[in-house]
Figure 1 (cartoon, one colour):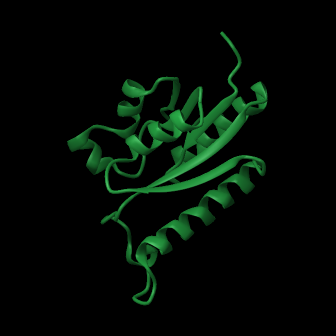
Figure 2 (cartoon, rainbow, N blue to C red):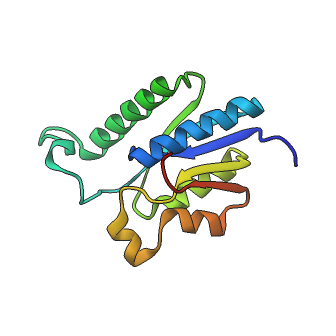
Length: 148
């Protein structure tokens, strides 16, 4: 097995996602790999509480992107991953497609993600993002099932 050179951790800011990010950082450190943090906003998430929505005078898409960028930055700071790549993307479809596209565009050889994120109700109908990524990824996928 060759060393991992580029690792992608998909984050949704759940507790499990943060634990997955910690594991990804550890793996990247072990292999000396480049690490990317990616958050995908499924345009426009209807499940958001009112305090996470934009004020009337703000563009809702810009608001969500800015908020997510700050959250990714805070997570990277918390984990000590200052040199990691940080990306926020928005989609009108599922996060799975954007994660797989990003992995291919950046020659990622390992994707790390939690096996259950914030969108549990959606998973009942469409299948989980993690399951879709495991089935379709062209690289290794490490799913975190629970927090130790």
